[in-house]
Image 1 (cartoon, helix red, strand yellow):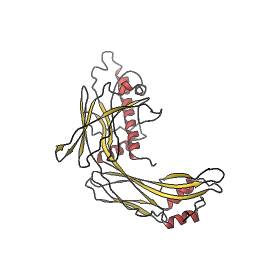
Image 2: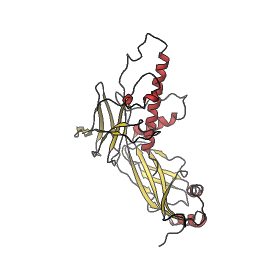
Image 3: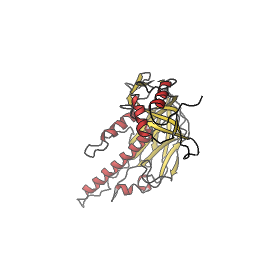
Image 4: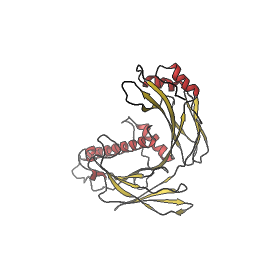
Length: 343
């Protein structure tokens, strides 16, 4: 499946926490010069929150942790769940508001994730406490996240993003010529990322016992897969141009040319991931400092009395076959083993 905005955002969130912990370690190192200073006398609890709301999710996850200080390597301390997890279940709930009226509060439950893999940046090693709900959301509501710890009350707000539709592709998608993916912006949606996944079947006589169902993510057709709307009202006509010839060149470079191999084209999934304004700016700021330790890390958060991000996103997918001209080009002009599908 194509890499989603959600996965990249969570990875960026975890990287931000790691950088924050390194800064804390550096502060401790430089303040050790004086024996008259109590390094932990001024400790103040900092709640760290990350969560994304999506109307289609059957389970909504909220990550609620805390920042910490201590002697030694901050990254080593991060592997101890007690360093970042609260030792008790905090009072966390979501309250939707419609026309100034509060809906019934949604209390978040907890679960501990034990199948964390080493090297996975989403959860702390070896386990992570997560807050969640399986309740459905009211699309007309703005949702307030309220977290009460023994020392703090943390709040944040996020609107929801509704469904929207693509106007191109319609019945088929053409890669013989250059075209544009087209859609209208949706209310509360600011950032739109487009991904394209080409499905195909493959069979190699004498090697495969059966036909394989495979797919390949087509990335090179877009100069930049991101489109940003001018406002949050919705209804703005948006389009993202793509270079049709790069579809063929990418398949030609990625698919192995094997004698006697047989392939058949399948559906093309065009996915648009819409993100709220808060999510857009969070991603932009983190991308702007990626890979540079010399740049000052900007602080961007919409968490009141804490840090992190609480935002919304929504994905739509449209699946269409290749146009007749595109399939003919693929079958007749490229030595990749593609054949016409039997009628």
